[in-house]
Image (cartoon, rainbow, N blue to C red; front, side):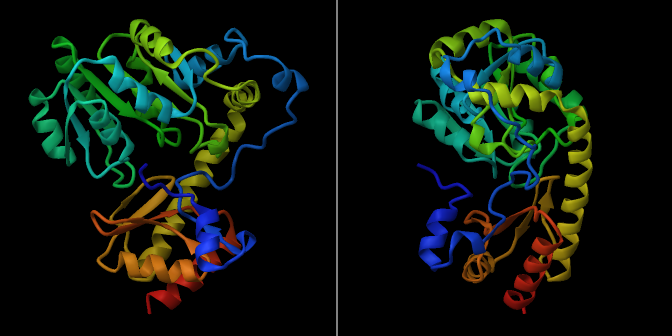
Length: 327
């Protein structure tokens, strides 16, 4: 299995620091999560029901005509490669590694390419996988260019798969509204923006035929009843969503400025994180962890991804840590 951020229990054991004393910046999850209300007993007692209003709520929130709830976008990432015959697949790199891993494991021919090469060489591929905005490199793409790419792939029976896990802060750039026809598949997650990573809830926006095939592959009850209850209400909380977008933007800008002031000017970033390429990455990661500050380390290229501190106290603690390890 691939390594991911958020392994706080392992870090606590390794460094001998109690969980309560850690500042975990190793994920791109919104640190100020949507306030989960009490969950009615019925949600725990009965099997989930597909006609509970969640699909309609997701269509409204994402602006999509058709959606399929899944157990986090990871479930779709693993299942989609099983729905195609042997294909030539181009995957954005650097980027979320599970995409290339899933397509290769299913027997497809996979190439990982930087954005410019991937888009310029699109004619060589049956499937192109993008992360938009990219994680961790922050790449963004012009909407019209992506739609043209979708059209070119669809003509030859291909797919454009776009992982929009970090799109909620900038919904105007989403392609969800364009997913009703063949050739475009958009993956969404409630884990990052709503801060509900533990709910394991995601949505696939695509054509009805593709969603039927994916649903058959995944089987029934992809989301637990309590998760369906919570997510439907989170989608309806428009005021919280608007306020969250402002907070994320402000915190990300503050984080970028802090990192730059300590000689770690971000290479790229998004509303959810800042990414710093630096040959000292492994040493800085170790030094910060020894102080109870966990960030995400990448080997290729050598880099660190910093998630957002939650409040002034967390920012001050990160600032002290950076001052000590970067000196």
